[in-house]
Image 1: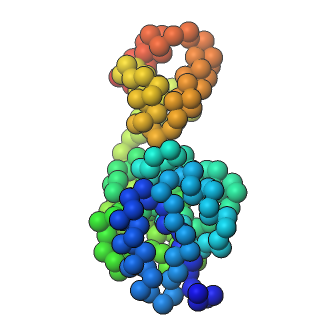
Image 2: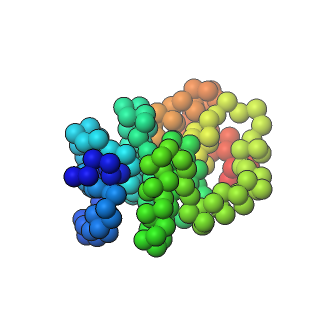
Length: 215
């Protein structure tokens, strides 16, 4: 192993994708793949066994998604450079991963040259976003946010996301799948909302959402 090479850990739930990615990266003399994981739980268990410069992290994975794993991961390894490598080109995902501490975000549709540029950039601690991501982030900054329409509410942004889905009649399990969090986390958000708003059931939460213009 080249000791001066950039050491990469790949996390994605598709074996063939990881295999192809490893093949591409290991053809580069300055890159070394030091480990792989198929989900967030496996990542947390294995990444500490290696010195890692760049973590390539997918979002959609079983057991523990990229969205769920990034916070505990950075709490344990705060210097880790995380590059999200996803099929999602939705501004919602960009913002959430960046807020959680990812250094970059690129799409799986990118060319090899862009992937290598992104890896080299985030390995130094700098940020890298694909053109598609950058343009959507810039455009979204010009649009009024839903949160600006909510006055005098003690709810957090995450609680508002959960509230909107509660108002749509979704169960905790369904909300968890949509937001990539566990149903227990959804239940905690619901209880916190009801306590903050002094409301006692889903119907009351739905009524509150309607008054605030969320549905």
